[in-house]
Structures are given as structure tokens and as C-alpha cells.
Length: 277
Image (cartoon, rainbow, N blue to C red; front, top):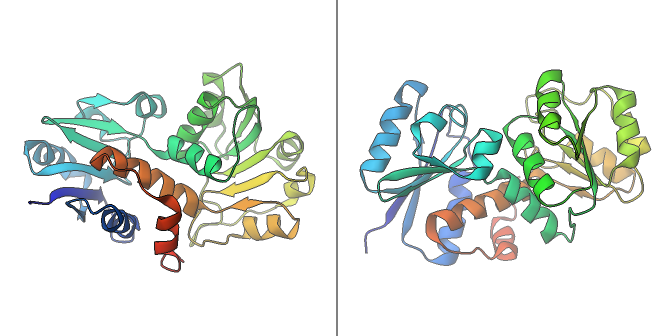
């Protein structure tokens, strides 16, 4: 049986963990697929999409800098991808390219896997890039009570909060507004690059002092796996979740879109233990 082809496209792309994740899922499920990395520069994006639609490709994942640029090249968008304006998964069906975003759904999956049901919760979201935007949409869809939205750049956060006037509230990214919002929250999410390897750290984590007992601190950063934010939260006895959870759950959603197969998530975590550090 001929293997169906899956790709990851981006520029740069060699650093990605997606081949490792999808390789593990292919091995677990025994499907006849291959997963390869393709460096696609912006000027070549349209040609790649046309090539994928022409045959031999079942789908592909999309990373920077193409998540937004690819939208006009696709034949259809899922509601989640259209809402957040970014695509990270494309399925080729009958010669048509259909774009999805698995970040929001994968995030909610990762919460529920830990027994954290979003419904009725108050959330403080820091960061309104592609992932933060998709996660906000998914959390509202999952029935959160309230979501505070903040960002270093004011206008994107205001725009995102305005999308859900009955659920979301914009706050300025300052120590006092964040501290006050944290005091009301059940879940804090860092959806920025703060703390990522090679990027700036948080200048002040004092807002954690106002975190209620039991508030979950979820850092989407997965490199390093144990960020300064998570270390400080753990010192204060708060439950934490690293970005590895979102990485795996959003990948599992994409994999099911590609192959139709569900992934045994505990087995996947076990198979990848020690390989993601």
C-alpha cells in the first residue's frame, strides 16, 4: 500500500517538533502515512498549495510565517480558523484545500484531560497572537464565565475583547490591572513569547501573589519546558501546565483530521517522555 504524504511547511522549519509528534502518532496507530518537513519561502507558498492540491498529498501543517498568508489560497475555512484568522492545519479533499486551526480545540482538550472543565470559570489571558486568539474563541465556546484579555500591544487585545462583549473584558498590561484580574481568576494563560528560549522574560511576576489558591497557571511556552513563570507558580503551590500539553493535543486534533484516527494520549505522552526536553 502506498503511503499518503503529510507535510509541515514553514520558514524556518527544521527546529519543529511536529515530525517527532506525528511520527509517534503514525507508529502508534499503524496508518500508512509519511510526515516530512518542507521549507517553503513566502514567495513559493501559492505554488506549494497548488502542488498539494494536484495530488499525492493528504494534508499539511502550517507554521510561521504562513499561518495568515495562506488564508486566501485555500478553498474553505473551518469556523474556528475563520474566527481567529489563522490556519495551522490544511486537509486536501477531492482537490480542495480546507484550512483549520487546532490550537483552540486542542487547548480545551488539554484542560479537560486534566479534569479542568472551562464552563463557568474566569480566565486571565495574556497574549492575543494566533494561539491566544484561537484559545479565547474556544474558551468562550466552552462556556467560560468571564475572560480578561491583556497584551503588550493594546489594540489587538481591545479588538479581541470586543468580539465577545458579554464575556470578555480588556485590561491594560500593567502590574495592578493584571493583579486585580488574577485575584478573580481560576485559570491564567501565558500565550506570549515571554519566557521562551532566546526571548525576554517576565519583568515582574508579582501578580502571582494575588493568585487564589488553586488557580491553574498554563504557560504555552514549551521550550524550555519548565519556564520561570511555572517555577514561580509551583513555589506558591499553584497547579501548573506546560506548553507540551497544548503541543500534543493540537497535534492529535490535526492527526485525526488527516487520518481519521484517534490517538491514545497517555500512550503518546509516555512514548515521547524525555524526547521533548
